[in-house]
Length: 231
Image 1 (cartoon, rainbow, N blue to C red):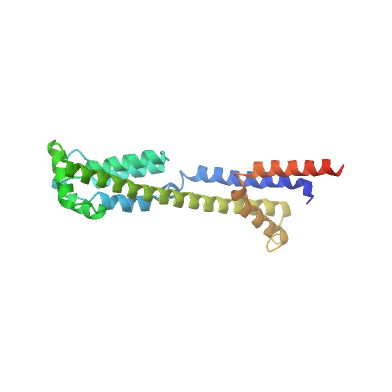
Image 2 (cartoon, rainbow, N blue to C red; image 1 turned 60 degrees about the vertical axis):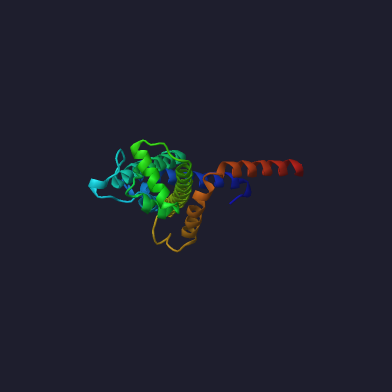
């Protein structure tokens, strides 16, 4: 390897990483569990904030727990803006609040159960909230917001980590196929230097993909600068 070729090599490795991410996007419709990655944490939080009720005691003008989860999953799989997803989830949770499930929600959010039950009853009946009820409802709103923010941020991190790992595996596989095709035989590739070089290229591809252009440009500029200095 000629040192002056390093910018081109980095660009090529970054291109492999970009190709791996593109291939991952292409196979998502065939492997739907990829888009569901991370949602289990959101589901756990939402389940605790939407206590399931018998059909006869379902909150009025609210979606059942099952439909809430289906709606949130659809938004998650379609990649809806994270802030919008959290706002939708909070709205559906607050609509699900009722006099029957208020004590359970109060225990989850550490809010006064008596006041939260009174809030739910007042909302259903259309009665104005007292100052104490307004304070309790505000605390409930803030705690629900914090719980959802934690759940969604963690889920988003899990999703990004998994997609990076899957893209890295695809990049390694592509590098292996490319290395093997250059050698022309499996015996001449397996456990040979070319195989380890392909492994190294595949592992570097996804981390370099977002910054390959900047690094290659910086290296090319540094090489040109040093050539000028030596003259």
